[in-house]
Length: 102
Image (cartoon, rainbow, N blue to C red; front, side):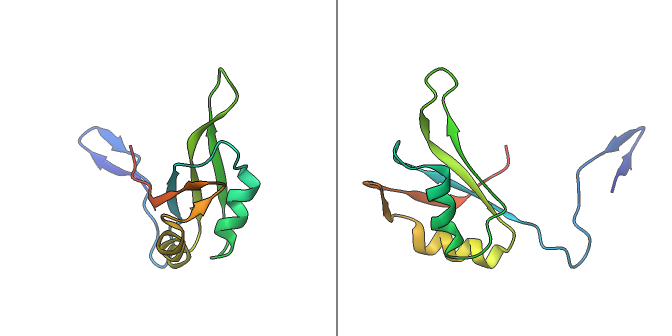
């Protein structure tokens, strides 16, 4: 939905009533040994995972130690935050929180 502001158009997407907006989670302190499949499985214990990505360094091809998980149901995402924040995964205590928009 676009809202007119003067002669400009604001293209900020809005959810229609009753639409559930997926929750994007920031996962930090990920071990360099952890693979995306492992991270996805960890979060799937709490519900469906829409997307899962570990950010990689373009030069080295190695993990930068953080990533993002998107879960379609906010309740599942909140449960994952509560249960997984601080949990040891591949020798590292991961940090999980709701991602903020840039």
